[in-house]
Every structure is written in structure tokens, then in C-alpha cells.
Image (cartoon, rainbow, N blue to C red; front, side):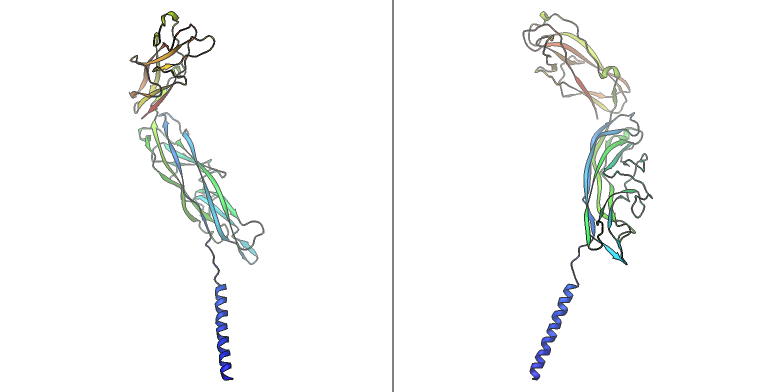
Length: 362
């Protein structure tokens, strides 16, 4: 009897240990930390040309866009004394913005940042939420620092327990902009920079007194600025060159020319850059510098127009011709045009050709 009672006691003690172990396992559930994350995004800026006389606010180059997605997860809903909180999580852009340009307008639209080049900034706009750099307004984060709320993730109506999460998507667009006087120091490469960091907070909830940095930001990279040292004078922007009337009988063989006519492209320049000019046409013939004949009723047959440089040498289409260092004042670039026989037989009629020129600078 004694032995059986002793065994029974040992069995009861082992069962108690097993119950305690099971209870302990029930008290330690796995719980992931609440968090909102994103990945850094970079707007790659293009190379642009700016006029020395460009006014403040002039946009330069083409706008470039990136899209960022903010993901919030495991946000706990808190209910105390029948009051539910922690049901909204807000993504905040800003709070420690990069240096703003003197022309920045806090209320937007957009945020204008300074760059390392005087007179050149970059403006960042947002969609679907517009970017601003206001501070102290109701739209700011809990620290009332410059920036704007990108969007929010909500638990949903009527939910009073558990956790929630979701995503916020925002597209940012950047474009270079003139922010001051353009000078020789405005020319160069734009330094890469981190413009906008991102934070998250829960208004009225467990993360309220300060925002939590996501550790990622919106950045810029690339981009360069060259000075547009010359502008095309009005009379040269869209000019028509009239060749003299010649007898078709004088154009007897392929390569024959006639009617040599001089013309100029007049530029107004400021010193400070090396300029070049490139001629293009949508209707190039096989021969160098020749615009192919226009066909159809009333047009001469097998006669095109050849373009020559100031030395009366045929130009090469789509190849830059260096003009050297730009002077201050008027720069006249001389050219010639003439008839050119591209085939035989030649028939009388009208001869036309269209030529486009593009200026570039270094």
C-alpha cells in the first residue's frame, strides 16, 4: 500500500510539471514588430542647356519620375476603457528636408531644392498627394516639421482588436529649374543628394510623440548643365533661301551644280562656351550635303539642293560643325546653297528642300 501511494504521488507531480510547461507555452505567442518600410528611390536627372538670360522659374529639360511604395504591417489596435486607438498609420515625407532653394514656396505646388550649382534647383512634385514643405500646419507630422503626409493606412471601420497593415503608393517627379542668376558657375555636374527622408507615425496612438524613420529616402543623381551661349536671331530662325532660275540645259550630268547662293545663320552670343552647329534633313540624297529632289507635279526632275559651308565645301548631315569659342555680340555663320544634279535626264520645274540646324554648346 505504501509503495502504491508513493508511486501515485510521483505520477501526480509529473503531471503538474507537464501542465505548467503547457501553460508556459501558451503565454509566449510569436509577435512581429509593428513597422512601415519602403525602399529608397532615385530620380536620374538629364543633361540640360540653359540660356544666360533665363528667368527664374524656367523649367529645364524633361521631367523624370519614380514611384515609391510604403508598406505597413503588424500595427496593433489598442482598446482601453472602451476607447479604440492606433487605427490610423500615416506616412510622412520630410521632417528633415535637404536645403531648400530661396525661391521655394512652402505651400507648393512642389518643393524646390537647391543644388550645388548657383541659380539651378530641382523641383519635386508628388501624385496623388502633392508635395509641399509647409511646417506647423495640420498636415505636418507630430513634430510640426517641414514636409507633407504622403498617405495613411487604416484598420477599417469597426475593428477594435488585432493588427492591421496596408500600402501607400506615391509617384515623385523631378525637374531642373532656374532659381537665380545664371553665370559661369551655373555650369557643371549636379551632385547626387538625398532630398526627402520618410517617416511614419500613429496620431493619437502608441507612436505619436515623434515619427519613426523608415531609413530610406528620395534621392537625385546625374544631371549636368551647359550654357546656351547663343540664341538664333529672328531672321535666321525660319528663313527661306531663294536660288536663281537657271536653264535646265546647263545641268547635263550627275554632280553638275549651278546657282550658287550665299546665306548666313545669324546668332546673338555671349562669351563663355564653345558652340557647334549640326545640319539635318529628312530627305538626304546619296551625295554629301545634298537634299534629295522633291517629286511630284511641277517639280524639277533629278535636281536637288546641296548645302556648303563657308569654305564652299559640302557639309555632312548629322555631324556637328565646330564654331569655336563664342564671342560677345553677333556671330554670322556663312553657308551656300546650289542646285545639284542627282540623276539624268533633268527636267525643268520647281526645286525645294528643307534643312534643320541645331546649336549645341560645351
